[in-house]
Length: 90
Image 1 (cartoon, helix red, strand yellow):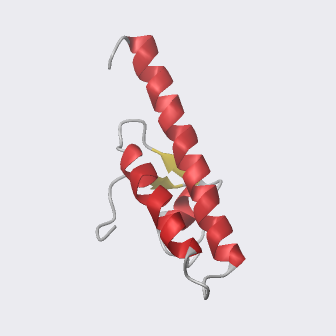
Image 2 (image 1 turned 120 degrees about the vertical axis):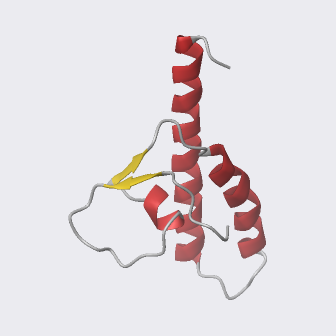
């Protein structure tokens, strides 16, 4: 991902110093916007994790961060789909 998409806001009252996107989706202070395209993050993270797994120099903690971000992004997508379904939107 070369550009930081408009996906949500930070609810933390501090600067975490972490790189956005992966760290945001792994953070409890991240407030995902309901109308943002979180599927794009899922579509990017899944193959990115596989690419990182193939790199022996990547630490297990880095992989864990990416996997947590993927799980959280998937949860957001599920919630979005539920909201759309209840509103009758596809």
